[in-house]
Image (cartoon, rainbow, N blue to C red; front, side, top):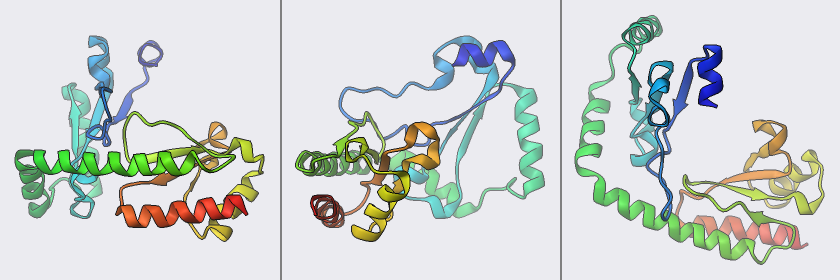
Length: 203
């Protein structure tokens, strides 16, 4: 993909906001490290917001090697009124990156526990399979074996299971027959959701 963008002069916005959530032996690879030529055609976006639950403080990081592109970005941010991050966000960001390593390890262990819970439940639900994730807390469920239309699948989860999951089709044609569930929640809440899915599908 990078070579195609390089060939056609396409600038890449590499959203790597979930890069801290990687499971097992999987590794996150930062886009411009794939090939040196990619450094000049991209902006890498990260943030402490997902990792440390700081989204309300509106703080994020954008890494741009090109001086020209960085200047253009700064001018656009000035126009939008985002030229000066708020002080609380800056302090929280610094504190998270300096002192949050132990907390992050505990969070990842909790997410892996939740992932095991999903894995065990989905194995007992005929017609749904877990798409085994390499990272993130947004987990995909493959519902193709249920043989439902987009509308029927959405109704199954919303009306019957009383859950609001992300319908796969909103991400494009390849997402049809899939749903996405957020496992970054208390295990008790996740278990309740999985119970509802199991009951809705099995009945």
